[in-house]
Every structure is written in C-alpha cells, then in structure tokens.
Image (cartoon, rainbow, N blue to C red; front, side, top):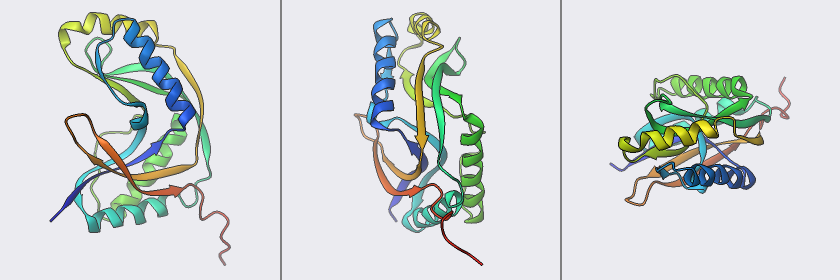
Length: 196
C-alpha cells in the first residue's frame, strides 16, 4: 500500500516568502549557520498527519473542507524570531506570528477537531504558529547562531492574508522536502451558501 506523508498547511504569498528570505539572508550574513528552508517551502503547519494511505488523504480533504467552510478569511502579522527547544539551544529557528496568533490557533483547533471526527490522528503537540527558517547543522556554532537570532529577534515581515488552507503531500529527498498540494480549500466557502 502506498503511503503519503501528509500535513495541513497555510501557504504564504510570494511577497511574504520574498521578505522572509531577506530575513534568512540577514541571519546568514550575521553568522547563522543553518540548513535553510527554501522560500517556496515556507508555511504554517496546522496539523501533521504523517504517512497515511490515499483513502485517509481523501478523508483529510473532507475534514479540511468542513473545518474551514464557515471561517472568513483573516490576516496575521508575521514577525518575531525564536527557536525550538529554546533560544539558548537553537535546533530550529523560526519566525512567528506577531499579531493574529489566536485566530491561527482557532483555525488549527477547528482543523484538528474535523480530523478527529474523521478518525484521523494528528500530531498531539500543542499548536504554535511558526514558519521554520532553518535547522541547526552543528551545535558547536550555537554561539554565532544565538547572536544572529537575538540581533533580529524583533524582525517583522508584515501582514499576510489567510484565504486558504492546503492539504499537502511531502516527499523527503536528499535535497530537502518536495511539497505537492493535494487540495487547496478556500476559507469561508460555505458562508455564501443559503441554508434553511
């Protein structure tokens, strides 16, 4: 049986990707050594499902449609650098959500609830809105990395309109993951339908 590595995500506009790439360049120029995420791969993960068969991918699409049908598009402000597990031991460097994180959290919660109704198991970790910028290659260079991240901690990208959620397939390769959208679902697609 073929399995598909699947997650539910919010993709960024080209303009936001370009501006996040500029932050990556500034970090690199200040000595941050990371395995950088390609700008075209930047996204907010709402729910990670892991490797699932095609029938479950189809159910994930149904769940996503249901979850977002009554949610109107909204905006967030991308900004604020941080790291997992902590800034002192930065293994993953990210840029967060300076405004609108509660709306993203509500959207992620609705998606998770819809996946649960379809009996699809998602990542149990609590949702923290972030765009992964890169992963640490070598902890011996944490000092330079910490200094670079601290220098740009207040970086703000700007406003991003959240209009759709994507059911995404991820294929891991030696050159990094390749993401293929399985279905892009517009937010609020059920708001204009008349029901009695």
